View 1: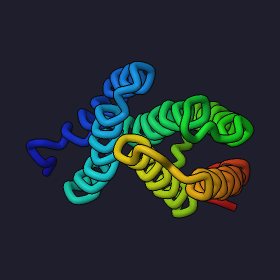
View 2: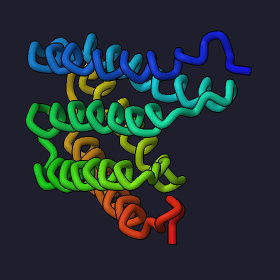
View 3: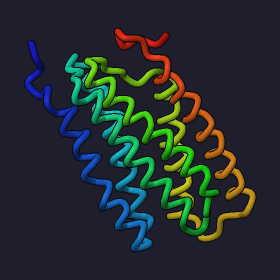
View 4: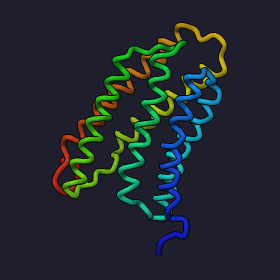
Length: 185
């Protein structure tokens, strides 16, 4: 029997997508505290929609596709903010490595979907998302609430995101090894 709120996880996923333009607007307007709160709320919906879908056993193909897409859009928007804005100004290569991986995986997901293969995120992909969200939350928290961020901290954030870029690429390689039944070779 379906849970009476079985549609809620998908609504939370869509809410995350709707929040992204507001987040970007706050970053551009340099209202970083508001951007941080929007980011935190959106990141919380990522956890909550997955938790509810598993608890209520209402995992859907829509959720398997749209949830990772919402994550990618949120992460890329937030990453763009710390790549092209002070105080961090991360190396743009980090952004483009992650962007290219996400584009390739999104295209592969669509190809697999047309073949009737739905590939859910694996543990490494989930680790990638947690590392991205944690690093972005920390960077935006510093940006919002610390008036002066020491150079060592900025370098630490850059190192963190180089590690995230590496894990992002490694986790993406799993999608290149998908078998016809949707499992990993």
